[in-house]
Image (cartoon, rainbow, N blue to C red):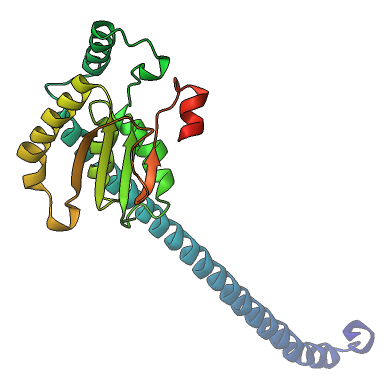
Length: 232
């Protein structure tokens, strides 16, 4: 357009002078566009920063939770070790076999099953209590409690008000009572009043036991006969 009209020096000068407002407008538009882009980029950066901060906070909370869980499990294992120091794995099985042979007890239902404390805590107790941090209350019963592994694990979880073990074999019942004395001597003094749990062991046929007040009943019934299961 300017070439068509600017045929003289004056015209070229006039044309060049006329061109300046258009150039200024373009520059202004460019600046405005750059500012708008910068604002958009800044907003995106802020959003990304917020997302990253949220992720870091979530990771931090997860780390705290895992540390708390590890601490709880470490304390749990230490306490179980104190209780069963004189009754390591295998003792219950040996006592059970000896008594069954001595009294000619051939029922397969009396076969001894060993409970692994930490697995029991993770896979059974934590499944029973979804909240984990909250106390369920009520009574926990173990039918066929042996030397009391499940009972002490349930007591240490802090989920229940009382834990009751029912066992028919005298040797296992006596060993559970000895373990209870170790619990009272080495573990109970270090627990708060809120964590206190009533623990009892009863020598009785589990099919005759009264556990109507139970909130949770555990029974390692792998070797139980159909008759016993039906009775339960």
